[in-house]
Image 1 (cartoon, rainbow, N blue to C red):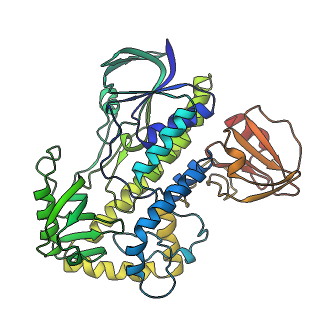
Image 2 (image 1 turned 30 degrees about the horizontal axis):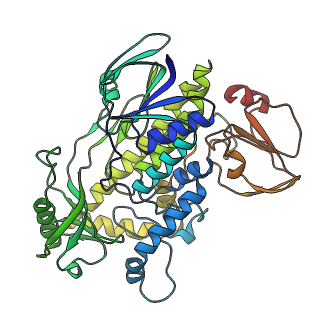
Image 3 (image 1 turned 45 degrees about the vertical axis):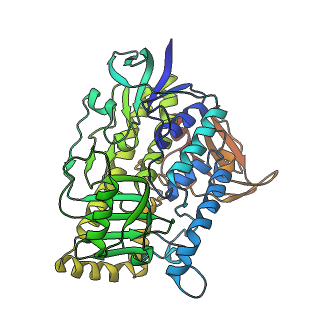
Length: 477
């Protein structure tokens, strides 16, 4: 049996890619080396454009449920931090500078959702099950061979064949290494820890992010969550088991307190290793998410980046499975520059956190710039990803951007744009009737303007475009 696509990795990126493929009528097989989902502490939220990609597939309700549950846990710490008066919605941070003001953004409704990665994985696993996607756990990839027609994968459970193989298996991707993708970048300079702990005297760690002469320490807003960063080089052995004693020692060194850990539920060790594959495709083998790019967690951009990789790749890979392989040529071209920019801004955040007087002077200047309206929008759009624009060769500034959700006045009533995209395919929004490909749905509006949206939410054409609609339909659909 030859599968349409084998996806290696059942984390958020691999699961979402499998959902995108299934929505497009392709049957993927997902392989995961872990027998059970990884429950270690991970990302604390889903970025704006990633959340929008999930909402376009009907997951808004599930995200809202998890957001409310998370906010209920975070509320005491957030209220204590904001002080008296109405509490402002957090706008995110750049290098620990929590100055991004949602009210200054062009689209303040496009923001991060405080949904922990563990909750997101539950949501995606449930949707994959609903769609009948096969996920095989406890299976490792040992090698593969490829030819012009298929990829034969050697696994711990025996050989498997597929038209395409996608590595969504994280920063140490087995698929990337076996395929021989180049992965240049910068070496780590930080040893960091993130953990959920019970402290003997939690009041000794002030809630929020604090830069000290020895590094960075953060506490909350989730109860018991602590985060440290020390700028003294990478850990001697990043693969060694993490002990309660080493996390406690790091907290004490950076905070300058004698606080002790009574118990530790989970912990991870991290660095600022920043690398990116030079291409995301080598023939029938592709990469997405951390397998294609790694960077420090500052700004919470990794999950945002990976999920939108999956959205961008999903409809193109589905088309390739059905014989329209040329669409895959645009995957690296569109997504590589986006990740390159994230790597650069995370490197800048690391440089801006270093605990020395020269960096402190630079932070003061950056803080001033961030409080200017244009500066605030610059940092806000960079971290949320809403400023992304793919180069589709069109003069209209809307073309290449990711469409935000909005209410459409249709001939038969009202509907939200994202709700109309839940079944996959493209969406043509226009009061005018015209012949469309089978995989493009028509939303007949009462009036203009007209717009064509790709399955990944990218605006491919408007009635102000410099490119003809027929050309764009032929290119993408």
